[in-house]
Length: 81
Image (cartoon, rainbow, N blue to C red; front, side, top):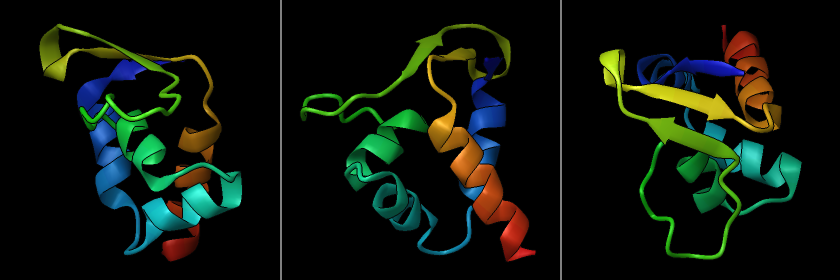
């Protein structure tokens, strides 16, 4: 899946309070892995990101190797409404 960095950040910014923590708990990953997935730059700690960032318009492009975190985020956003 490929989307712009702006689109990915919009999903992250739309998460309800505690959404990062809920996704991490549900998927049995640490919170920093979820933050890195959405563009945080704390790659120094040992976590799988699953997203590749390329420069370009609208913040660049993001190729998601695995959209599990993305889909979980969409689910939490949908249920927050």
